[in-house]
Length: 126
Image (cartoon, rainbow, N blue to C red; front, side, top):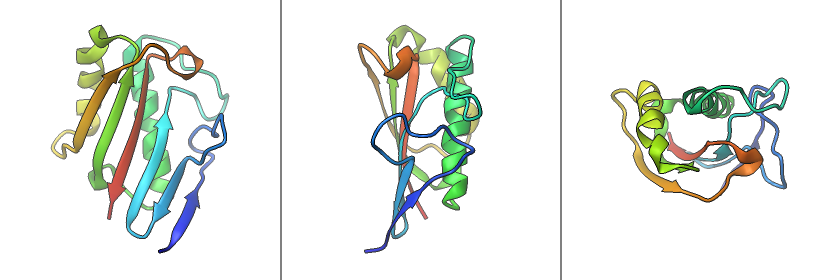
C-alpha cells in the first residue's frame, strides 16, 4: 500500500493535527474544508452561498495538488449548521457537480469549526 500526505498552499492549512488529504494508491481522502481563505486564513464574509463557493474552491485546490479532479469524486459529506440552508448550499454545490453526481450525505450539526455555516469532506478515486 502506497500512502502519501497531500499539502498545498492553495487551500487552508490544517487548523488541527490532521492532513489536508491522504492519497492511498488510487484513492484520495480529503479532510473537511471550511470557508477559510487560504491566503489570509480568515473566514470569507457573506452568506452561506459565499462560504460554500470557498469550500468548493478549497476542495478543488487539494484535489488538483493530488492530480485529481471533481469528476474523480465518488463520495462527499456535507455538514451544515442549519438545515434551512440546504437548498442554498445545494444550488452552489450543483454548479461544481453539474453532470457528475457523487454519492453524498448531508448532516445538520450543532456547531462547526470557527462557527462556519458549511463544511465538506470527500473521497475521490482515479
